[in-house]
Image (cartoon, rainbow, N blue to C red; front, side, top):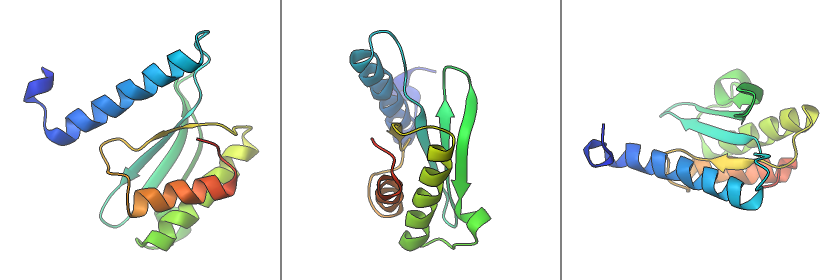
Length: 122
């Protein structure tokens, strides 16, 4: 399917992923790509994973459903701190933030702030 036939959300998602790849290759010409902090948000829950795209494995994950935290901005910040703790335990300090097609405000911004407060750099 061509880019013109995709919905605006699909185009945002593809554009953000392409930008992440360009940034990784410009900063790391030897292709040492940093893990990706991938975020998925629903109306009730928020899910986040730290993914190593080179190996194709998930290094750490957290969700508001596992934490029984609810669906507020405070819950998203707690999920960000939890994934940061799990990622540092797995040996990851620097990640690329992949928000997909979600706009950077509200729960997505709170999750990013929580991850930064937890020790992740992006």
